[in-house]
Image 1 (cartoon, helix red, strand yellow):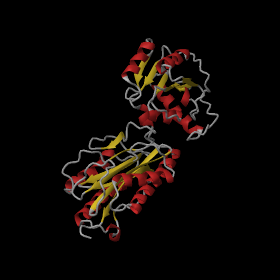
Image 2 (cartoon, one colour):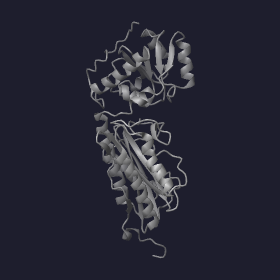
Image 3 (cartoon, helix red, strand yellow):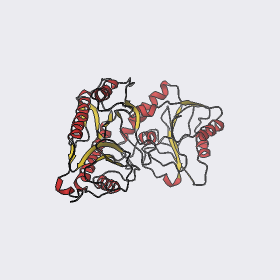
Image 4 (spheres, helix red, strand yellow):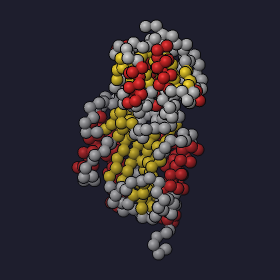
Length: 400
């Protein structure tokens, strides 16, 4: 099958201010090409934001449809708005269209021009960009082509991080630590959750984190007996309460997460004990993490431990999930490609990165960790404890 691209043949001659060196993308695309050959695919259509960023270095918004295509032989092109056509990418064949053009028509024209009208084309049927309408139009516009579900292929490719990706994730972890520290250093009784949220957002940006990510920080005000929903409420944080902070920091798209708590004023021995138990169980998880270990075993440590200790009556949530690149306009706020759950039947590999999260009765502790050849590498390194504000800073007790 002949192609008529003007693109470089995966030459990767220029960096164009891309986030990674050209070789990083070349290796990723090479892995995709091998999978395509194994599945007898002529080309793969990539339109999910995370997959697009991973393979092309392009993270375009979805104001209008946009997609890239890579063939099994190595040719590539990307179709997107003319306004976004200066994207920093290794792809030489960028097809920009006017805002009044129909993007699917432009894509169909490009596919036909590329000689792919009769091709077996891989697509991601779970992609948020691939609407039912777009899928039907592709099928109608290319009646002799065969569309084959990639079945989460690129999401699985993204599970094991390269050293270049880990560098960004380590920096994201440092930023998350700094953000939580900023909250706890500056928080005062009478502040609202919105005020605390602003402190974290400011710290993330000042320390080199990305801006503009919706839901960067979730701040929850906790009573010692429960865990009510957060959401940057306007109600003031008062003495004798606990502030539970979950920071989501991104550095050049790569995200770290951390959960910590601070008690305002006197804290009960029961809550201190609960925090220690949850931290202890999660510490056991981290000691167990290493390549080749079954994910279900990691989950069982915390889940069964919390139920056996009586600190939770039921445990319907996962105890950890995948971390990595999150686009600027993320639809998924959490990546559940791999999770620690009772039915997890996969094993840990070197280079995987996760958010370990534990919560019970108002106690929340969370860590970003990477699986290394030596075991577990903590990427968030703030002290694992219940933080306590000095009493003089909270002198607004009733009657004071």
